Image (cartoon, rainbow, N blue to C red; front, side, top):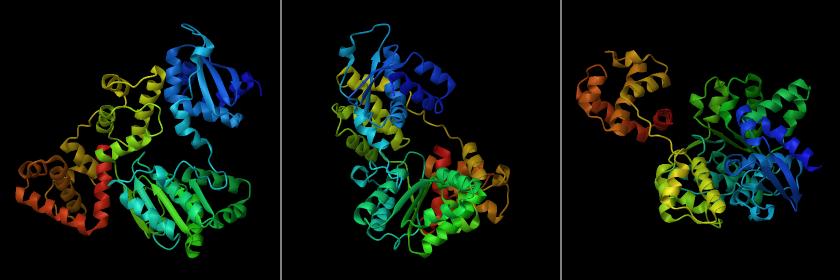
Length: 447
């Protein structure tokens, strides 16, 4: 395949995954200048486009090229217009991202597991230690303990990493066991394809042969009746044979809308563990782990700053770090703190301002009741509990005074608020469902 044909094929693939405006802005006037020893030299019009492609689209471009030519290992971006310098002078050593992310392209087609997801590079902290412990127990005895395992938590917290790491560890320690990983979206596509092509029996046989079945992002199966039915029967077949089943989701089964009750009860029948947003110490540990193999090591001051301001999730942390390391390589030096602040300022999410009205609205929606009834003088069971949880969160998370909370919730006495706070505090220690509900509410409030 010549350079033009290869790049045209890659562009056709890239175009399907980016907006029309972005495609026109960043990929216009680009071309492959030459290929050599697995490296593609991609011509770009100016330094700004070069930096942007490095930072935002590098992995997508590399994947698209490799889908058309598997021998490609890396990309060098060469400025072809404007302040053009000699071709040879622009050839730098492979970027840190290539070293860090190229393994993503080598997914095992037999089990869909990515070899980069292992426990050797998984940071364990207070935010994920329960999920880690459950995973380690399963690795020792697949299908015997914690079956099914259901891991839930927000986006970018490491659910895919830990579920695939469990699968890779089982493959290594139990080479006779067949492991398979799939997203629920891909599962739905396969169900539809099997029905359309009259291959339902082949589809069923395919999945029943596995000893370990891992499904990621289970929430996307909601509203897909036929897929839920197939998963239900598959679950029963695997479970009855003591085969290990692992699910991940962004929420607990109870709060996945339009999920069949029979599936929900099976998800809840095993071990449910959450992964919370990482604390500062865990974020710091993640960053220090990621820079071990980099030629450029940001200063402690820079790393500590990034850990303190990027609070959302691990994926955002890694994205900020990649931007910093890429710029270090382009400039051939470490960035100082002021440069880092300017570089990642658009990555930092503004602190969300939450009002009492916001809390009432979100909790009323969570429990599917009208907001106004929370302030009424009613002792209906379906209202009392949500109201007590509102009182607990306003006091625990926002340190609002008992009298003020009572005033905002229908003019109640401060002793009523104190009683509600203490009651929910006790229930959190005794009732796992209450704990899960409050975690889900906090996700809605803060994310």
